[in-house]
Image (cartoon, rainbow, N blue to C red):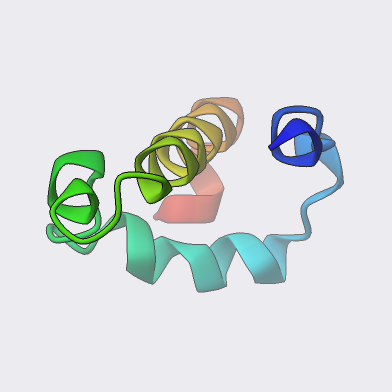
Amino acid sequence: MKKLMEYDKDSISDGLIKKLKKYVENPKFTPDDVAKVSKVSIFIVATFHALVITLNDKSHAHFT
C-alpha cells in the first residue's frame, strides 16, 4: 500500500494512461462495486480513480 500511495504519478506514460481509460470508464469499476467482491480492494480502486482524475485534471488531452 505504501508503494501505491508514494507512486510517482508524473512518470506515467501517455500509453499507460490510454490503457487505464477503459477501466475508469467502466461503471462497474467503482469502490462500491468492488467492495461487493473484495473489501481490501476498495482502497486500491479508490486510489486508482483519484490518480486518474488527477492526471485528467493536469492534461485533458489524455482522455479526449
